[in-house]
Length: 524
Image 1 (tube, rainbow, N blue to C red):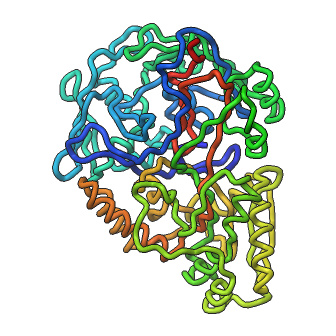
Image 2: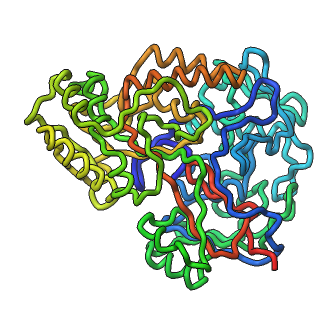
């Protein structure tokens, strides 16, 4: 998936992330808490060799600004750079910026650029390119999943050839992480990007056939550590079964997002191994319309939270690949920002029954589960688990699955009313609280939640540069969300990728993004 809000398995999506976890006003890097799991260290990778990387989705286009599918993100760090990036330890560190600083009010950010960065056509990258790229992202005619993260930018200007100054409308102590996925594309090349892309990353494109394959070779103009491979091919697999067979046979080296049903079969195979995020930030969420009965009543929402057998959902629907979210929190319990005095919503039908009754929902009443037909089988499995639980207290969960566009049209975009519906969905954000809770902000969540107390607490936390104080303020944000239950979050999901045992240097971010910049074949 992607650092974004997903509202469809294939075609319907909206971007809802605000900022990331970063450092204080004078730091060039921050700490987002180790959201990654590594393969092996790049030092063990031999120079040369080839890798074939597969997924069942194809890559339809190359422009990172207007990406359409999560699988496209595998290309981003291979081909492009931003001012900042997330490293293997989960820290936000400089990329083409060599340092940054913020004004005391966290509204003005100054980025000092490296002077050795060149595009693959040999042209130097300067502050003018950075400004032009940001203007492209900010252009209302540009459809980008980064829109919410950069929405508070008032201006971006060059201050000499190697300095960029960003002025914000609102304070944001975490701005460097907010722009991790803002890649400094050559805007003049956008019209030709699918044919002759001009890039800055360790690889460049040798060949691209949309929805089939992308072939990469080392970029001779790259300014960082040289690409370990002489060639990398990213291909579309026919299906998960054939992909796994090709991996076992050695025809494929890496599979991104291995089918959960296949992961257990890889254990004990000496020729294969897996990699997954240490702190997952991709979570299952079920939405209701918080502005319409019965779920405009917080007690009804709390009742649903208690009625979910999270352990059963994790094991039966997601094959154990995830972490329970007993406090209904988008942050994993091992996220360093997880905290606050939080109610535990572990499975308790007695509490659920009592809260339903207080909310006016009685035995014999019906709630509708609005899922998808022909895809997301795990959603139906989860629905059947909840259905069985609710029947024990006399409430019926009517499961209705529809074609994906019909499903999405019921509740997307935010602002639509869908009373008495429970809608399964999936979200993937960076592991910072600013991103995870940014989705709850007014006008962003399809749940239509609008809570002034939350908005005020979020703004205060986002503006706090002191890490200790920031954690306290983010704990307050979590307490409000925990009490109000705008969404049902039963668990965080782990995206597991699989590979041949001789592949090294692969790692994954919390949202499941695959990193191959230093991937290669193990040195003999």
